[in-house]
Length: 302
Image (tube, rainbow, N blue to C red; front, side, top):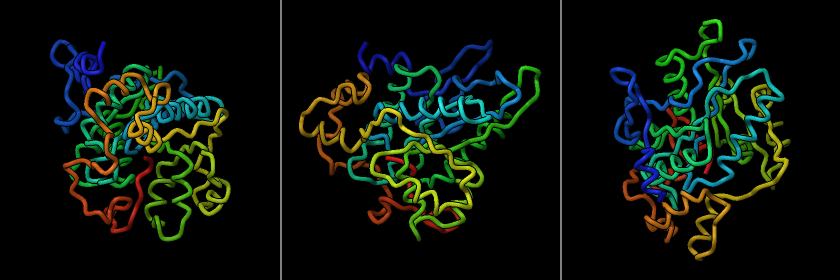
């Protein structure tokens, strides 16, 4: 089945239930009121644990096997080393307003993420809310969105005995994020407290990052920062994938096969300078954007 045929069979959508319980697919890029939940586990297996949802924000231009692998590494860590029970995992592609070099348009990036999770995962989902926004959304705002949708709109989850529980939303990211958070003047204490204090983070170590030094500078929020080692090191990145594609080199086994087919079918990443045509933010905001409180923040991942 081709990538486009797979998208037609499993559209870039959320599933809602209509009359009679029938599942209705709704395009995540054109239906702002729909939140994907078909893979969110509504009933906990272990009532003694705390429900957890992981959210990974980033460009995903394109999504790579490491983006997906990060969720699996985090799931192993959560099961072995925490008192949480993982009930959902989401990819949240950044909007076209991020205006970063090499950024494919939001619809293509959402489509590629959807293809990746449909073919490789049984529990991951793609939320298009952030991608639909005309302006860049700071990470704190995106996490607030998930908190609202899961706990306020859906009412959290329930235990096997019927007790309703809230879901802890947490950020999943690479160690490069923690490194930027530790740099003076890059993130405000208000933003750090909102992200690390309220939501917490699960951080995958990466080669070349002095994660211990970075975390030491974030001591007030250390209890909410979970460090996850890469037992098998993988430093593939979207940037390297785009470089390979421009040089007509193989990226097979570095990104999902369905994503490769989609890239080929739509002639993506032929020119690194070709940013999304609908970008609206000024060039100075490629890496930063004003948060609601007027502070600056950096997107969680690339």
